[in-house]
Length: 211
Image (cartoon, rainbow, N blue to C red; front, side, top):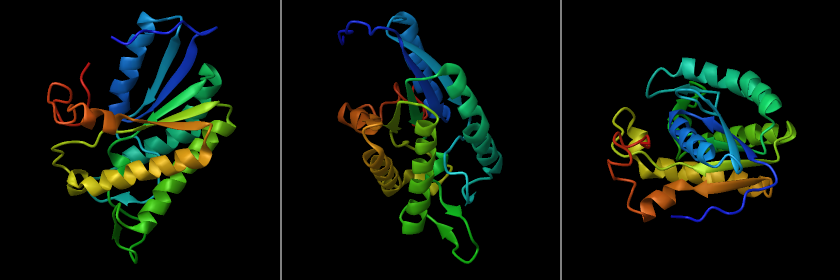
Protein backbone atom coordinates (compact mmCIF):
# COMPACT_ATOMS: atom_id res chain seq x y z
CA UNK A 1 0.00 0.00 0.00
CA UNK A 2 1.36 3.41 -0.99
CA UNK A 3 1.39 5.87 1.89
CA UNK A 4 -0.77 8.91 1.18
CA UNK A 5 1.10 12.17 1.80
CA UNK A 6 -0.29 15.03 3.83
CA UNK A 7 -3.08 16.87 1.99
CA UNK A 8 -2.33 20.15 0.21
CA UNK A 9 -3.76 23.49 1.32
CA UNK A 10 -6.86 22.68 -0.75
CA UNK A 11 -7.90 19.70 -2.85
CA UNK A 12 -6.26 19.53 -6.28
CA UNK A 13 -8.90 19.97 -8.96
CA UNK A 14 -8.50 17.39 -11.74
CA UNK A 15 -10.37 17.09 -15.03
CA UNK A 16 -10.00 13.83 -16.95
CA UNK A 17 -10.53 14.14 -20.71
CA UNK A 18 -10.68 11.32 -23.20
CA UNK A 19 -12.36 8.29 -24.70
CA UNK A 20 -13.88 5.17 -23.13
CA UNK A 21 -10.49 4.08 -21.75
CA UNK A 22 -10.23 7.45 -20.00
CA UNK A 23 -13.73 6.85 -18.60
CA UNK A 24 -12.38 4.02 -16.46
CA UNK A 25 -9.30 5.97 -15.42
CA UNK A 26 -11.51 8.91 -14.49
CA UNK A 27 -13.80 6.77 -12.41
CA UNK A 28 -10.85 5.20 -10.63
CA UNK A 29 -9.47 8.63 -9.81
CA UNK A 30 -12.91 9.83 -8.70
CA UNK A 31 -13.26 6.87 -6.33
CA UNK A 32 -9.83 7.64 -4.89
CA UNK A 33 -10.77 11.30 -4.48
CA UNK A 34 -14.03 10.33 -2.76
CA UNK A 35 -11.94 8.39 -0.24
CA UNK A 36 -9.45 11.28 0.08
CA UNK A 37 -11.55 14.45 -0.21
CA UNK A 38 -8.84 16.65 1.29
CA UNK A 39 -6.46 15.66 -1.49
CA UNK A 40 -8.38 15.85 -4.76
CA UNK A 41 -11.58 16.63 -6.62
CA UNK A 42 -12.12 14.86 -9.94
CA UNK A 43 -14.39 15.66 -12.88
CA UNK A 44 -14.68 13.65 -16.08
CA UNK A 45 -15.34 14.71 -19.67
CA UNK A 46 -15.42 11.74 -22.01
CA UNK A 47 -17.11 10.41 -25.11
CA UNK A 48 -17.11 7.09 -26.92
CA UNK A 49 -14.53 7.26 -29.72
CA UNK A 50 -13.21 10.63 -28.58
CA UNK A 51 -10.01 11.85 -30.20
CA UNK A 52 -8.04 15.03 -30.60
CA UNK A 53 -7.41 14.37 -34.30
CA UNK A 54 -10.54 15.78 -35.91
CA UNK A 55 -9.46 15.79 -39.54
CA UNK A 56 -9.31 13.04 -42.11
CA UNK A 57 -11.53 9.98 -42.49
CA UNK A 58 -10.97 6.75 -40.56
CA UNK A 59 -10.83 3.68 -42.77
CA UNK A 60 -11.33 0.92 -40.18
CA UNK A 61 -14.95 1.95 -39.54
CA UNK A 62 -17.33 4.84 -39.99
CA UNK A 63 -16.13 7.19 -37.28
CA UNK A 64 -17.54 10.45 -38.58
CA UNK A 65 -20.00 10.85 -35.71
CA UNK A 66 -17.12 10.32 -33.26
CA UNK A 67 -15.05 12.96 -35.05
CA UNK A 68 -17.90 15.45 -35.03
CA UNK A 69 -18.58 14.89 -31.34
CA UNK A 70 -14.86 15.18 -30.55
CA UNK A 71 -14.72 18.55 -32.32
CA UNK A 72 -17.72 19.75 -30.31
CA UNK A 73 -16.07 18.69 -27.07
CA UNK A 74 -12.81 20.44 -27.91
CA UNK A 75 -14.44 23.62 -29.20
CA UNK A 76 -17.37 23.95 -26.79
CA UNK A 77 -17.67 21.48 -23.92
CA UNK A 78 -14.04 21.53 -22.79
CA UNK A 79 -13.64 25.33 -22.58
CA UNK A 80 -16.97 25.56 -20.75
CA UNK A 81 -15.98 22.86 -18.28
CA UNK A 82 -12.59 24.47 -17.68
CA UNK A 83 -14.41 27.71 -16.88
CA UNK A 84 -16.76 25.92 -14.49
CA UNK A 85 -14.36 23.51 -12.77
CA UNK A 86 -11.19 25.64 -12.98
CA UNK A 87 -8.99 22.54 -12.90
CA UNK A 88 -5.43 22.68 -11.70
CA UNK A 89 -4.64 19.84 -14.06
CA UNK A 90 -6.27 18.27 -17.11
CA UNK A 91 -5.44 14.58 -17.59
CA UNK A 92 -5.72 13.44 -21.22
CA UNK A 93 -6.01 9.84 -22.39
CA UNK A 94 -6.98 8.55 -25.86
CA UNK A 95 -6.28 4.97 -26.91
CA UNK A 96 -8.06 3.94 -30.11
CA UNK A 97 -9.47 6.38 -32.66
CA UNK A 98 -6.50 8.75 -32.89
CA UNK A 99 -4.17 5.96 -34.03
CA UNK A 100 -6.31 4.59 -36.87
CA UNK A 101 -5.32 4.79 -40.54
CA UNK A 102 -6.91 7.81 -42.24
CA UNK A 103 -7.48 9.40 -45.61
CA UNK A 104 -7.14 13.17 -45.86
CA UNK A 105 -6.90 13.40 -49.62
CA UNK A 106 -7.70 10.86 -52.31
CA UNK A 107 -4.45 11.69 -54.10
CA UNK A 108 -2.47 10.87 -50.95
CA UNK A 109 -4.42 7.72 -50.29
CA UNK A 110 -4.62 5.96 -46.94
CA UNK A 111 -1.97 6.96 -44.40
CA UNK A 112 -0.90 4.95 -41.37
CA UNK A 113 1.13 5.70 -38.24
CA UNK A 114 4.28 4.80 -40.15
CA UNK A 115 3.79 7.72 -42.55
CA UNK A 116 5.49 11.01 -41.69
CA UNK A 117 2.46 12.99 -42.89
CA UNK A 118 0.17 11.08 -40.52
CA UNK A 119 2.61 11.67 -37.67
CA UNK A 120 2.91 15.38 -38.39
CA UNK A 121 -0.87 15.84 -38.38
CA UNK A 122 -1.41 13.92 -35.16
CA UNK A 123 1.42 15.75 -33.41
CA UNK A 124 0.08 19.13 -34.52
CA UNK A 125 -3.41 18.28 -33.30
CA UNK A 126 -2.06 17.20 -29.91
CA UNK A 127 0.07 20.31 -29.64
CA UNK A 128 -2.78 22.62 -30.64
CA UNK A 129 -5.20 21.06 -28.15
CA UNK A 130 -2.66 21.20 -25.33
CA UNK A 131 -1.75 24.81 -26.03
CA UNK A 132 -5.45 25.73 -26.13
CA UNK A 133 -5.95 24.26 -22.65
CA UNK A 134 -2.92 26.04 -21.26
CA UNK A 135 -3.97 29.34 -22.81
CA UNK A 136 -7.43 28.87 -21.31
CA UNK A 137 -5.86 28.97 -17.86
CA UNK A 138 -5.06 25.33 -17.06
CA UNK A 139 -1.79 25.27 -15.13
CA UNK A 140 -0.80 21.73 -16.07
CA UNK A 141 -1.74 19.17 -18.73
CA UNK A 142 -0.83 15.55 -18.04
CA UNK A 143 -0.86 13.09 -20.94
CA UNK A 144 -1.33 9.42 -20.11
CA UNK A 145 0.61 7.17 -22.47
CA UNK A 146 -2.10 4.51 -22.94
CA UNK A 147 -1.55 0.77 -22.69
CA UNK A 148 -1.67 -0.73 -26.17
CA UNK A 149 -4.78 -2.89 -26.69
CA UNK A 150 -4.40 -6.65 -26.84
CA UNK A 151 -6.46 -8.79 -29.20
CA UNK A 152 -8.34 -5.89 -30.83
CA UNK A 153 -9.84 -7.45 -33.96
CA UNK A 154 -11.72 -4.56 -35.58
CA UNK A 155 -8.72 -2.74 -37.03
CA UNK A 156 -5.49 -4.35 -38.20
CA UNK A 157 -3.38 -1.35 -37.23
CA UNK A 158 -4.41 -1.74 -33.58
CA UNK A 159 -2.60 -5.07 -33.52
CA UNK A 160 0.61 -3.58 -34.91
CA UNK A 161 3.06 -2.58 -32.14
CA UNK A 162 4.51 0.11 -34.42
CA UNK A 163 1.21 2.00 -34.30
CA UNK A 164 1.41 2.53 -30.57
CA UNK A 165 5.17 3.06 -30.52
CA UNK A 166 4.61 6.02 -32.84
CA UNK A 167 1.60 7.24 -30.85
CA UNK A 168 3.58 7.16 -27.62
CA UNK A 169 6.53 8.97 -29.23
CA UNK A 170 4.23 11.74 -30.45
CA UNK A 171 2.81 12.23 -26.96
CA UNK A 172 6.34 12.48 -25.55
CA UNK A 173 7.38 15.01 -28.21
CA UNK A 174 4.46 17.29 -27.39
CA UNK A 175 5.06 16.95 -23.67
CA UNK A 176 8.77 17.69 -24.06
CA UNK A 177 8.10 20.71 -26.26
CA UNK A 178 5.61 22.30 -23.88
CA UNK A 179 7.25 21.36 -20.57
CA UNK A 180 7.19 22.25 -17.71
CA UNK A 181 3.46 22.92 -18.10
CA UNK A 182 3.08 19.38 -19.46
CA UNK A 183 4.09 15.94 -18.27
CA UNK A 184 3.48 12.30 -19.19
CA UNK A 185 2.48 9.23 -17.22
CA UNK A 186 3.65 6.06 -18.97
CA UNK A 187 0.80 3.74 -18.04
CA UNK A 188 1.74 1.47 -20.95
CA UNK A 189 5.23 0.79 -19.59
CA UNK A 190 3.90 0.36 -16.03
CA UNK A 191 1.38 -2.23 -17.24
CA UNK A 192 4.00 -4.12 -19.27
CA UNK A 193 6.62 -4.07 -16.52
CA UNK A 194 4.09 -5.36 -14.01
CA UNK A 195 2.87 -8.11 -16.33
CA UNK A 196 -0.64 -6.65 -16.40
CA UNK A 197 -0.91 -5.79 -20.10
CA UNK A 198 -2.11 -9.28 -21.03
CA UNK A 199 -3.88 -10.05 -17.76
CA UNK A 200 -7.58 -10.54 -18.48
CA UNK A 201 -8.45 -9.80 -14.86
CA UNK A 202 -7.16 -6.27 -15.52
CA UNK A 203 -8.55 -5.81 -19.05
CA UNK A 204 -11.11 -8.50 -19.93
CA UNK A 205 -11.55 -7.10 -23.44
CA UNK A 206 -7.86 -6.29 -23.84
CA UNK A 207 -8.53 -2.55 -23.89
CA UNK A 208 -10.59 -1.22 -20.96
CA UNK A 209 -9.46 -1.49 -17.34
CA UNK A 210 -11.76 -3.06 -14.77
CA UNK A 211 -12.71 -1.41 -11.50
